[in-house]
Image (tube, rainbow, N blue to C red; front, side, top):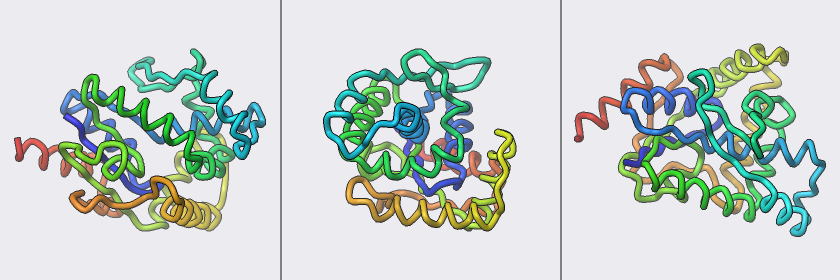
Length: 219
């Protein structure tokens, strides 16, 4: 079974997908962390993403995998756990530009499809229901008020020891939305057959419950 959960930044996709995965006992695949991991490597190795040769070397030299560590779904690049490093402000600012590169998207989509088809999965991102798994068994699209999303992002940053104003975060999220929805390849878009869920006033448990109920009632 493939369950696709799409939506803009900080709409609650990752946490909700993890909860649905846990309850339904279906593997969880965090596509956002895959693009963040690539972005982390681009930044740390100072790779010029406009150069095809550098991109080819980058994609051929890295291996991405997921592993459960102390009950948490962690992402590894070449056996290094980068789960916390990919949540930095710097990665957040550059991930849209990096993930818009066709060569990177092609590589990541192939990997996502391979992982998903092997065991089924709850998979979240921005183009899952439209590009990665257009024939997913279930599709959901999460939305939320910009201020609410900024407040959620602020909590995440504080956990990393970073500080930023709410206004700055709102500006960054709106900019990210524009970049994601206007990019040429695999833009953020709600699939026609996706169920929209506004998470602005919902707790995580309520978001999870809505999705699980819809799936279990249809089975």
